[in-house]
Image 1 (cartoon, rainbow, N blue to C red):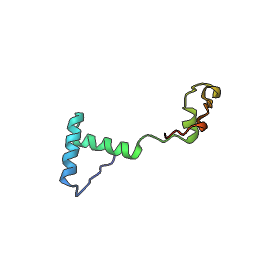
Image 2: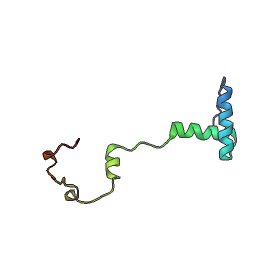
Image 3: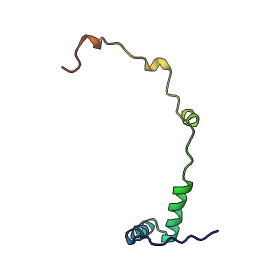
Image 4: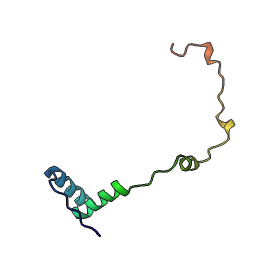
Length: 78
């Protein structure tokens, strides 16, 4: 594995990293690794086809037919 050195980091960022690491019960170095991993190797985006396939079947088209209640006969803003 490689080593990574990051120079000239603002003290506020270092403090935030240490606080976040403490909150998660990890060292700052371990937290830094996880942040880099999630930012660079995070979840792979689904294709549009995969997203469509993941939509659950919620019924027949007839379940969603529009009911005509003669709304055109009245002014809906009054």
